[in-house]
Every structure is written in structure tokens, then in C-alpha cells.
Length: 339
Image (cartoon, rainbow, N blue to C red):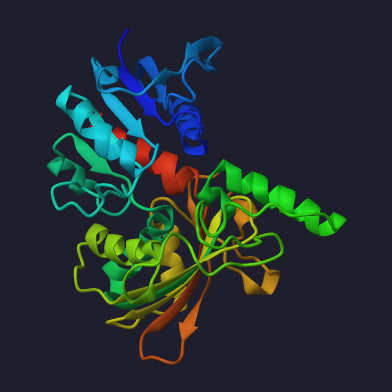
């Protein structure tokens, strides 16, 4: 049987499950599956096309004979096992932040920098979910008029914090409505010194605080955008916010350009760019929302308008399914570039 042996690491998580779903949707040529997770999930069964597969504990020897390994089990596991998979001949596409800023590791969004995969040495990094949708929207504007500065504020769904955060939003919402005790364990992140309510609330804190009181999530967006777009000196600033939405990240993006670009031309360029759907008709109250992106792989853009406070400025509203395009789909698109 023609095809490739594929391993999914972190298969019981939200992104791991989505890997299986989208690999089948896109008819990725698979000869055999290897489903891997931590020892806690070992021996669980997952059905694929009517056949049950047993989840195995991820170990170095798990990658013998594997062609593609999709990792979504956290940075520590990636640091430990991705090099072992590469050593055994697999191409690793890693969804953690472990290798993203390594100059030897390509950081790829296929619509933006597909040529970067040519330089891989067995390991390719998948960017942060909020970075992916941002650079897809920025690329056609940069090609046409040149980016001078980017300011972004995110409105990130709880699915970005994992299935347990989704469950906590459900439980908190019920608790608020019923007036009962509220679980608070996942926001801003598990193990944080303080835990906050996310139901009917917003929390301007994603990941740990880093340099200059930016969060790690904000610094990821800044650094990854520069690397992917090959603009190491691009001024980028970000504020990342967790919102009580189950799935789908939204971003308010302000760009300052080097050359004039009208909102009409921006709409045309964005609508012609691969992987973008423009939904932008204020007279009909048409603009993208997270519910529009559920189960979709495109990046949706709307609210395109001039920023009159600078000579060549535009405002955009950018929305995408963070589990699909922001994680699993982008990883699989990277693998497809190598087929």
C-alpha cells in the first residue's frame, strides 16, 4: 500500500484529535498510524475508519519506521522526543514553542513562507495559533505596500488553553447563572499564583509574564511574525487577552504601511490571497466572528478601513479557528509541502 507511516504525539488532546480528523479530510496518504501520548493515556483506544488503534506511551523507539511525526504534547515532550524521532528518520512537525525561534528550524505558514521548508533538517516548527492568522492577513498587505509597523490586540478563545479550560468555562457559566461555587483552575494558566473567572469576563494575561511586563504569548507573536515574514526589524507590539469564547481567536490589527493602500485595494488583495475569506460589508452588518470560523481552515478578515491618524494606515479584524488553522491544519499543510 502506498503512503506514509504517521505518528501523532499527544493524540488524546484537542489538537491531537484534530490531527486525525484533518489528515483524513485532506486525504493525506497514510499507510500506517502510530498514536502516542503520555503514560496516563496509554492503552486507550481510538477508532479511525472503523478500526481501533491502541494509544501507546511515547518513547524514542516509538518512531522507528515513521515518516511524519506530528507533535502536540507540549514543549518538554518535544524537546525530549522530537530529536529522537528525527534521528530515526522521521520528519517532525512540532506544534509547541520549543523550537520556533531556533535559527536552524524553519517556522512555516504555507501561505506566507512555503520556501522555508526546503531548509529543514528533519524538524519544522508550527507557529503560535495567534501568529498564524496574523501573518496570513499581513502578507498581501506587505507585498503591496510594505509594512512599517504592526499593532495587534487578540481576543483568544479558551480552547487555546486546552480541553480543561473549555470545560471550566462551561462549569463557571453554570455556576454564575445558578449562584453556586465556581471552579477556577485554568485561567490565566494552570498553576498560576492566582486563578480568575473567565465566564462573563476577560483576562488580559495569556502565558507567563516575560520581559518588560509583556506575556510570553505576546512575545511569541512579536518574534514569530518577524521570523516568518523575514522582517527581523519590523516594529510589532501585541496585547493578548483571553475571552469567554469556546473556539476561534479574533484579532484587532492596526498596520502602518510604507506606501498608500486604499481599503478597497486591501479588500481585493486579501480576497485574492490563498487561505483568506474577506467578510466585510458594513451596510449589511457583515463581518467575521468566531462562530463563522468554526470548522473552517481559512482566515477571515473584515472591518477593513483607513486609519486616519497616520499617513498610510489600515485597521483589520482577523478571525480563525485556532485549533484547525491555528494548529492542526497548518501543521498538515506543512507536511503536504513535502509530499
